[in-house]
Image 1 (cartoon, rainbow, N blue to C red):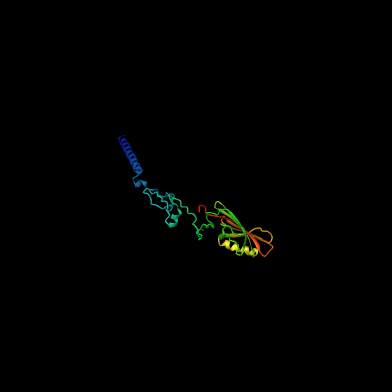
Image 2: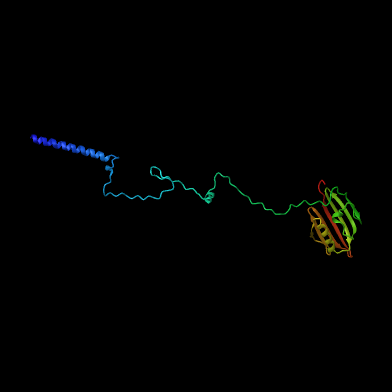
Length: 230
């Protein structure tokens, strides 16, 4: 009986030692710092992880890559990106030089003071603007007149000359063109001619009519402006 008790006691002690050892081993295997307890089980497959090419930038200590945006390095790329803070520049069309000089103001053909109103038969009246519209050489003056109105002088002259209508017209076309007048033909009676000469505000009307003789009759009506305050 005593021998049987001793055997039971020994068996219980051995069982207690085995349980304690198992507890110690289990605690040791669960600790994170023990390399022996963290060995992979033989035959277990570790899934392959494909790693993409790293993005531009340096890797952080934790293993995560810090991506740095790429910046343009060429001058063309830099020029393509406008500076939002720079003011906009708007360029207008370049000035075009015509090369033509500025036209000088036209000189007046008469000057103040203007003559008093007057008329004459068979002669050129005093104050008539002969420097502008003188009678054709060889003319016989029938009548002439002048009439001022402010800085405007109206004058008239009628005469005959032994020339045809074209010769009379050509004479005044040449003499008035030298003073800046341009000419234009206007309606005239049968057998005659009429021409209007203009230069700015100044005008001269010429009318030529036949007389039934070798001499032609012509009339001049002029409106000339003197410079104001001159």
